[in-house]
Length: 332
Image 1 (cartoon, rainbow, N blue to C red):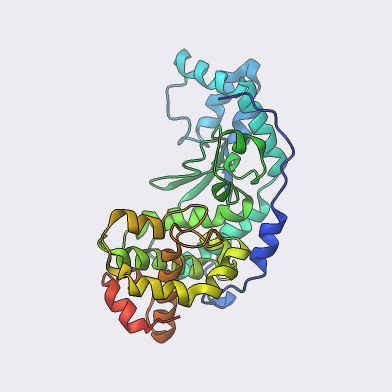
Image 2 (cartoon, helix red, strand yellow; image 1 turned 30 degrees about the vertical axis):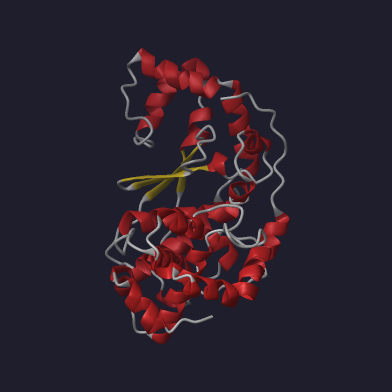
């Protein structure tokens, strides 16, 4: 990894203020009905970098019981000890660790947010198990900021240091990606990981409509898990992008219908309407990316508003995208 000069992280205040300006639309569960779930995030990164390097092997053995997911190697093997020693003494990684500690001196707020989301999950899915949560410093492994294996979920805190964190720019991470690399998006990414673990894909891949409804079900799941989180944060749009699609939704929908794009099976067409990017190809550069996902979200929301007795579990098991569209009666 390059040795980065670390600057103070400037949190994207504009994005967060714009996000908060948009009313959330998630189903509300009375607090009294929510099971109590308390999330404790176990900070492997802090524990690892806090070890005395003069007694490193002894310190690692002391951590192994608390962090078996990270320390499952033979700690009597000198090669394993040396590998970890090089990691915690690498100048570039140390810069990233210290910046992570500046941004996240504690995780109290994040633990509260995840406790609320996990409580909602247990309300809707009481028989499903929730993972134990850990955090670590990944050395900017931004392609996979959340890792999930069996009963463990791991958050790479150094992938959420703010969109203006200089090393992100030096890694040529696109701006539309960097703006989601801040604390507000950690609970979203965690719950998306849980969704992937249990439910994705809930509709067999086929045409564009199937992809849209699959995305809509995922976003409605986020509605249910975090009903007070703004739509712009759930879908990763800016406030201006939310305004744009609300203003132009009828025109965009008309194009989707006129060009029969809802039933397209063309790989490139489906990608341009569902994948992240600076905008949706074929539309204004002011448009948000992945507009197909947004429309799928509105279809599912409309369906659930028309059939309020439908449980979230029933929705997750639905496989007929055409039936959801038809019964929703969605038309912007």
